[in-house]
Every structure is written in C-alpha cells, then in structure tokens.
Length: 281
Image (cartoon, rainbow, N blue to C red; front, top):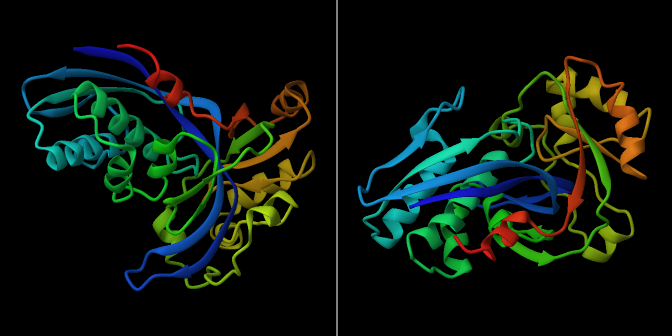
C-alpha cells in the first residue's frame, strides 16, 4: 500500500520559559506553539515484511537515528504489528533550526502508520509514545496551536493571531541539548497564565545563552530587529518577526543576506496533518 502526501509542518515557539527542572533532568517549560504553512512531505509504502526503512538520504542523519525510523519502530514495538514500511521524506524544514522538523516528521509518521497499519490507537497513547522521542512531538500529534506546559505534553488549545512571519535561519545549527545543559540557562522563570501571554508577556529564556554561544544568531536577530520585533523560536537558530501582511514580509525577505535562509510563512492554528487525516487513502 502506498500513501502519499502526508504533511509535517514547521512550528514557532511564540515564547519559551523554563520554569524548573525535574529530578530526571527534564526541564519544565511554558510555551505557545503555532504551526506554519511551511512543511516537509512524507510518503509511506506499507508492506508485510516487518522491516522499517528510510528511503533516500538525509545528510547528517543516520537512518537508525532518524526520528521517523525511531517513531515507526516505537509504534511497531508498542503494538506488536508485523507490518513494515518504507518512508520517503521530502525535506524542506532546516535541521537544528528550532522549527521542529524532526519532531513533526515523527508525529506525522505516528499518525499515518496508526491508520495505515490499522492500529487505531487513541491520541493519548500516540502522545505517550511520541513524548519519549521528543518534547515537541505531542503538539504535532495534537495538531492545534496550544499553550504548553510540563515538558511540553500538557496542552491547552489557543487561537493566537495567524500572523505573516519572516523566518531567518543564519548559517549555523544549534544543539538543543547544548543549550539546555548550559550552566547559565535561566531555569526558574515564574509561571505565567494564558491571559498573561495574551496581554503581551513572555520571552525566550534560551535566547541569552544562544546569543553568547552563536554570534551568527545575534547578528540575524539584530538585523531583523531593524524591521520588526525579532524573536527566536525554541533553542534556535531560527529567528522570526511578524509583519502586517505578506507584502511587507516579502519586502524584507528581498533584503535578507544571501548566506542566510529566509522564508515568508503564515501562522496556522490548525495543522495540515489534521486535514490530511480527514481524507481517504
């Protein structure tokens, strides 16, 4: 069975607070996730051979380490399914950019194979599998913009403005583990409420650490700040700013230095993955 056209959208963190740290080392967070109309595309060839294979190269990521392979194997192990799959990825979201590409690919894999393997697991069980792969996986499974707490798995639906954004990825990659292990990271920001966020409160606790370690990110956020309030998503390296309309964002895009990745995107409160799940295979 071949099933094409499964989207895996990018995301932004509209703010990111680190509010504590559990005994097991996981950080407690508050953040707002919003999706973008910018995505990877996945296709799945299901077969009766139980092998799980990634088809095609993904530079810098070994197949056994790829979150799509790990997600498929975790689902297969959890359910005892004897079916396998070849997974094709058309990669557009930059890696190690704070845009959630790997986690989104994993979530799409879990959602797609849950259907294509005929498993019909409820969303809560998929999320329990997904959070072990990455803290961002549950929100991509959930498929709606959300105020997130805990380690990212406690989600409350939210409807932030669906802004036009210019996103810029400078010429560097940022390791999430490196940032969260930095001794200077603020880990005890007082929690805020959804009402606080809607009133304009919120920042990114990871930003000072990233700016100190990565001058390329500092340069990009300074440059973008000349046009609109510049922020960083996740642990970076991508920075972003909202604009009044698409034309305004594209005007600034035309000025982005050639050695940076730039993209104009629209915020989306509903993931295209949910729309795909409503379609027949």
